[in-house]
Image (cartoon, rainbow, N blue to C red; front, top):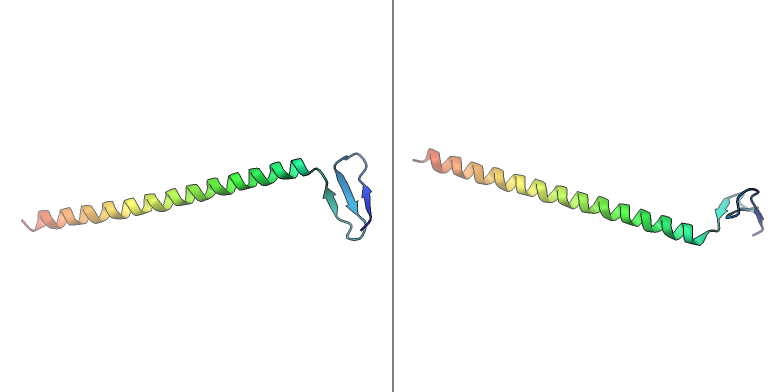
Length: 74
């Protein structure tokens, strides 16, 4: 694999075999991965909270239905 520096960009090189541009700045890549993981964790947390809210709504609906049944039985 032969690489060439991309002019005007210190952290970029071109792989002459595949013609791909590769970022060689490992700290920037690590920061990107950390941000991506944080966003993914936040999305999972939000999704879990949504599931919990839906469960609470369902349980509240069940309780309301039981109360109506008890009141109508009188």
